[in-house]
Image (cartoon, rainbow, N blue to C red):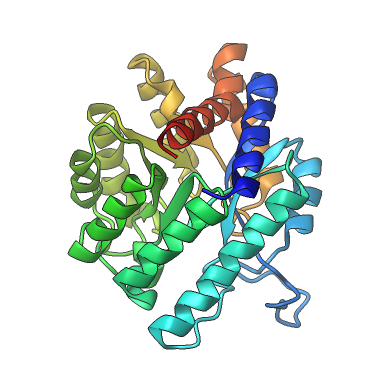
Length: 313
């Protein structure tokens, strides 16, 4: 591992260690180099409209959010068409994430993104290696829904094995918005590496409609409670199921595996974190549990992950 990412990781861990009890962290946000990929010329919002790191910070301040976990926005990154050209485009999107994390070290936790469908397996593994060894990312995400590949396909398993071998944490878009992320597929991933954390974003929600997502919501809750290495990010998920998940995990003494998030720009930070805060109050959660979900649990997740990564390096 190069010296610069290691220094950044050490500094981030030191900051998280000292401030974890007071941080509010949005665990799922997407930033884009809007100079390289400018917004469409329209005054109206459109789904996934690119926002820059500076835009995120503005919204974070409005929503009283201390830090955000950021990765690239797949709707904004343009693939030229060939595997090697797609590799370069996605690598550049990841490089922007590293750049802004270095620029705003106390506001962003940077995470990576790879894609075996568009880039090919070898290139997808190369991106993961760059993300971890060159950029200092702990988490590398795949999006089976948008990029159209089964979450437990042989290609994905190979990439996941590579991410784990680097000491990093595999993350997935995991929702009811496609056929590519069923609960049994996530279970296959989790059981393949039972002693390694797996991060599943949306906990079965994503872009799925209320009716279509209902079954996966229940399956995801049950799966997580019996598979202790799965951690869920509560973004783009129906509010009533957020409530049910929070209660079920608290009763099972597993609250530390659920993280609050907005999925910005696909969701508004102010709306989501206003809702989270009101929900915790209505559930009469104590201050420690509330602060845990709002940021401390994710800070500890990152700290533990970097400790494993640094020990392996």
